[in-house]
Amino acid sequence: MRIEIIRHGRTMLQEEHRYVGRTDDPLSPAGAHELEAASHIPTHVYVTSLQRTRQTAELIFPGACLVEVSGLEEMDFGTAEGRTHQEMMEQDADYRAWVENGCVGRCPGGESRDEFSARVCDAFTRLVHEAQSQDMDVLTIVAHGGTIMAVMDCFGIPRREFFSWQTKHGCGLMLDDSAWEREHTLRLISETDHRRKDSQQ
Image 1 (cartoon, rainbow, N blue to C red):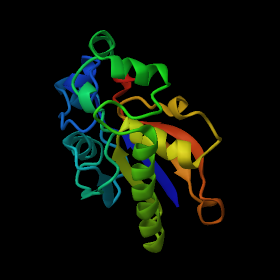
Image 2 (image 1 turned 90 degrees about the vertical axis):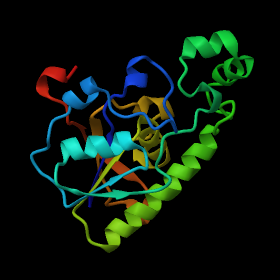
Image 3 (image 1 turned 180 degrees about the vertical axis):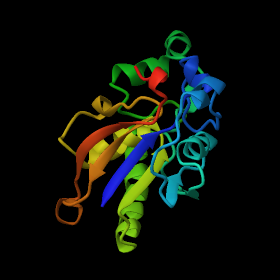
């Protein structure tokens, strides 16, 4: 089975370089416009509870049945939600300490990276097992940038550092699960891009 995991399109708050985790921010007009329908539409596409993933899936995979999966939502950024990095650095000592520690501990008022990764990888593992039991050819997921980083940090081959798995909005990763049962790993096949050609950069 192949697995494609895609980052949702841009939102207004993200265009303003603000933290968007659990905030249910919709796609911006520009973010929606730059997405392009795929040439192949799967029967089912799995999304999170946040509307930006559902809106993205509707634009890239029109007509697909969208299935909401709990646990794959973006990290909860706590007091940083809706604010910029610069604002937080100037106003919040706890945030500065979190950043200086490599964003590894608990984000003030939100989740730690370990808590976030455990939540995401547990939900992802359940979804993969379900898809395998149904003999799916391709498991298609539209989620969040942090979700992709957590999944790839846990399971991705080649092994890379957490933040090196950052993915652009509207883009994703195609993965091979042939070693999943034996090693619980996913091999990177290729990067995917669901943006209009004039939006790719």
